[in-house]
Structure formats: structure tokens, C-alpha cells
Length: 385
Ligand SMILES: Cc1cc2nc3c(=O)[nH]c(=O)nc-3n(C[C@H](O)[C@H](O)[C@H](O)COP(=O)(O)OP(=O)(O)OC[C@H]3O[C@@H](n4cnc5c(N)ncnc54)[C@H](O)[C@@H]3O)c2cc1C
Image (cartoon, rainbow, N blue to C red):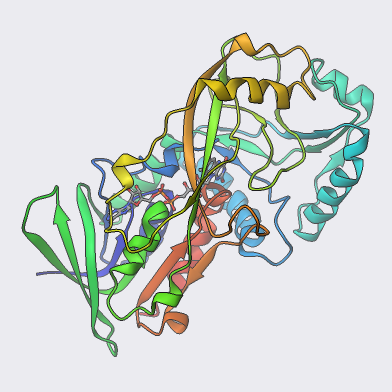
């Protein structure tokens, strides 16, 4: 039997950020990661954009953690020499999009993002000559980060503060043995060996991303109605195979389930379009942890390229589909179906689940990467001792 202050299930950017924050406070922490390396799930399948905090409803966790997380992430990146570029982004539209852009500008102000400004037509064509739009808002605080270098820095800090990461270690189930202390017993399988390891801990944090619902389902005593229905929504990317004419990130107005097919650049200057929104449907939380993780289909269907080109030609008319190639994809663990309004992050603490020491994170889709350090600061407040 091994004892830790905290067991974190999931070594994505969220688990790593929480682990680092707790280890920094001198707590004994272990991160369990079922894959053979940390950060290989959704955390390495995204746009790498440091979002400004523009789109989310006022007062939502997404708005609060994105705005705070952005500041923390830029500071962290400076301190740890993580590669990032504050490129800025243009949110663009034609004359019939003016109302939507106006609403976006209001939302940003409500969230405390007060650096957005309207560009004149002259400014638009000076900044981005290939753009053909009548309106654009400029967000100077939006940037891009090298996600792997960010996660490596989080991991480095975590290990320096004596944190431990156990890879090829899959959470199987947990039971609250003593609610007063609190004391949890957690069962972990190592690299599919038949014998399971038992770990004691005071705090159990479920940061299992796409599998958070399946992990929750294996926590004995947790009321099933406290496990939200998750809907997977795949986001596909296409890469632009020629030299990119844009210097900023270019976003149209948002669509249901996503931000609209946009153009992002990575820190090496390579451009990609996406992610789009391909709903994969509701998932069944009674599946065993890890049962479907290895079978997720991340392939990008070539047939989607025409649609990418069609969407983007609205603002980049000279784009030719022959210059697009299937790239990569990621999957969003959404808490809303295509028919519902977008849902907020759901962070469930012990007061809500009535199981001392249990903290669970559900629906950590975009802007989870940007928000990661702010989420970590929030979560560790649940750990009272
Ligand atoms: C297409 C797309 C684009 C995005 N773009 C952006 C963006 O530009 N900017 C931004 O801020 N955010 C973006 N996001 C969101 C961001 O990527 C996520 O919010 C973030 O990566 C979530 O991290 P996580 O740690 O919760 O999940 P993950 O990275 O998925 O980590 C969870 C980990 O848990 C492990 N795990 C699962 N089950 C078990 C188990 N039983 N035992 C042990 N380990 C287990 C998994 O292997 C995985 O490594 C995007 C997301 C998507 C899908």
C-alpha cells in the first residue's frame, strides 16, 4: 500500500497543472496516466491558441478561468522560457455579420477583455492583404503557445517539487474508506498486468478528460445523477501546404459547437484550418475506464477538405482546395448536445458530491489549455489541509 496526499487521474495539461500547484505547496502528489507518456490525449490535439476570453457568457467558469489563465500562462511562459507568440487575432465578417461582431465585442467587454478594437478597411488590408472582409475586430492579447514545451515545463516543475507521474497506470476504481479524514483507497492497473496496485490518499482528483465520466462511474458511493452526460465532438484540421500569407490568427464568427473554421499558425509558422465540428454522439458512462480510449478514430477524412475550402473562401477567396491536406484531429468532451446552448466547465467539489476529498472536472474543452493554470488554482482550494 502506498500513501499520497493526492491522487490525480489524468496526465493531461489539467492534471499536470493541478499536480504542480499542489506539489508546490509541499503536498505528496501522484498523477496516474494510462498512456505511455503524459499529455498525449486532447492536450496534444488542439490549436495551441492562448485565447483572450472573448466569447464566453459573463460570470461563467470559462470566462473567468480563460481571462485569468491567459495572464498566468503568459507569465509562466516568460519565466520558464516556453515558446509562445502573441500574434493577435482578427475576428472577421462581411456586412451581414456586423451584428454578430458587435455582440462579440460586448461579450468581451463584459468579461473584462477591454483591448479589442475595430479595424478600418485600410487597416485590414494593410495587416492582411489576402483577406476579403468588410469588418474585423482585432484581439491583441490572443497568442499561440508550443503546447509540448508548456507541458514539459509543467512536468519539470512538478517533478522538482517532488511530484510523481506514473505512466501506463490506469485508474480502475476507488472507495472512500473514511469520510472524516478523508481517506480514499484507489485501485490502479499497471500496463495491463493482472494484479492491481492499491493507493491510499486524502484527495482524489478526476482530470481524465474524455474519460472523466467513466472514471466517475467507478467511484463507489458517487450518485449516478452527479455524472453528467458527455457528448464527443470531433474537431478536424486541414493543413495549408504552401507558405501561409497570414501573420495573424483569423477567425470568422462562431458556429454551433465551435468557433467556426478558422486559421491558426503554429509557433513554426505552419498554418492550419479548423477545427470543424463533427458530432460523434453521446457516450455511455458505464463503459470501463479506458475501454474506448485506444479505439477513438482521430483520422481526418479527405472528403472534408472541400467543406473547409468552401467555408474559408468566404474570407480568403484565393484559397484553393488543392493546397489543403488532412492534418490531425482532437475530440471535445462536451456537456451539451448539438441542440443545447454551449455548456460551461463543470468542476464538482466535495460539498456537491458529498464525498470528502473528491474533486472532478467534466467538460474541459476549449479554452481548457489557456485556462489550465487558473483551473489549477481553483481546484487546489478544495484541498483544505
Ligand atoms: C480540437 C480542439 C481544439 C482545441 N483548441 C484549444 C485552444 O486552441 N486553446 C485552448 O485553450 N484550448 C483548446 N482546446 C481545449 C484543450 O485542448 C483541453 O481543454 C485540454 O487539453 C484538456 O486537458 P485535459 O487534461 O482535461 O484532458 P487530456 O489532455 O485528454 O488529459 C486527460 C488524460 O487522462 C488520461 N486518462 C483517461 N482515463 C484514465 C484512467 N482511467 N487512468 C489514468 N489516466 C487516464 C488520458 O490518457 C489523458 O492523457 C481544444 C480542444 C480540442 C478538442
